[in-house]
Length: 143
Image (tube, rainbow, N blue to C red; front, side):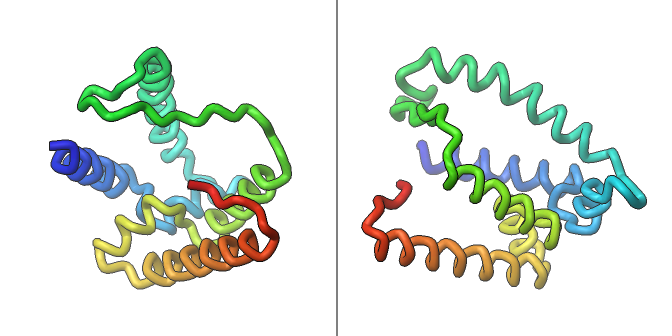
């Protein structure tokens, strides 16, 4: 049952990304172009996501288990360290250059967008390289 509900939630999330325009890299790049032809429409999408997410996370923090009985796995660290900052900068650069972040890229692949497949392949290559680098450094990997 958990897998079925996860699939339904993923489908609804993907449809939301398509309907809102978040899976369209041109729309995203227009939103990020503050000095040019700025398209503020995605600000409403992000505002709506925050409005739904804040109370959802507040409720989730009060629970030990999800509504389906699975253990809650929320982030616990409040530390802003170099890996977080570097990762955030790289994420932002990728989003600004390509107009994709991971969720919309996966939706774009299912919609047949070649640019989403190229972005996802590059993202996966970066993840593999980071994992290899961490293994070489002897640091633990993120699970």
